[in-house]
Image (cartoon, rainbow, N blue to C red; front, top):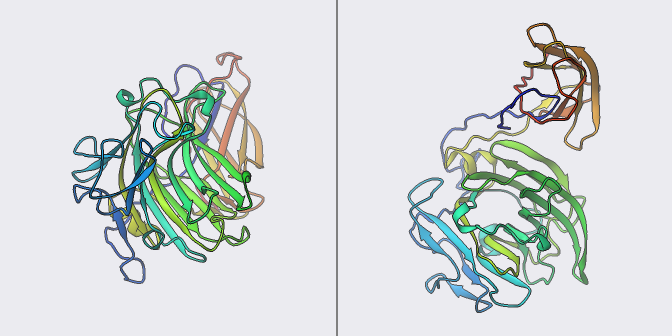
Length: 377
């Protein structure tokens, strides 16, 4: 997690992750071709199956793209020479929704029962194209990536979007995994709703989703990385509604809004393992290692001079696995070894809260500190 400690820090929440550079190549570990690309480097939309635009509420073949669907641009780009711009205009199409999306068919997505696939892509929301923000009344109906159920009225079981109703008064990126019953689409059982972090305009976000496709919630799962951080651990749930499969969509899909929203998409790729989809564009992601049982998490921090601090470590589900109280030394250094009572993902949450300090204000402030992990036998 990137950030700064501005002034004194009374409370700190940090996510820990390790980035490992991956070797370039377009094959999986078995040496087989495992990649489809939708990175717009052809200079058009020909890598995708069709384009959907809500102004006419219809699909367009990629050879007949109108200004309501999408535009290939040379700037900004996440990689290569091209990206795609998707714009939703005020009050388009049907009264309840606006959309500007491309999609890859079920065969290209490889989203059928039992298949295990990785999907990577990059997304940016430009400030100039979102001057009025997102409609707060729409809440989280601001979807920029989804895997849509084919021939099924229930939409998507997995989607990523922007939630504009944050209690912190900011736009937040989220991922949803929901179980859906085709006979009652309006009442999904939300297995997981996870806020991935604050959405900042004019910044590229790099995503990787690892999905096991299944209509059986005990078999299907999803895990997700954003900017190299393993933010959603493997979470089981119904990743597709039925045997018809799913198709991958990107662009922007929202509740009808009286203002314009714009998103850039780039670097879409599908593979059968993590390495091909990240190394193709030289992104830095890693399979999440784990802290072994009875090994230590070592935490060090500065700017806690004379502070007595409680350190709480929780796993990806925010369940506390270790807690200890320590005092910083005169130089503001603080460290602690926390034996893990059980294996936990490497990506843990570390909370430091000042208990007694003449230098730290009583009010809670957020900051980012450096945390390092060290295994000890």
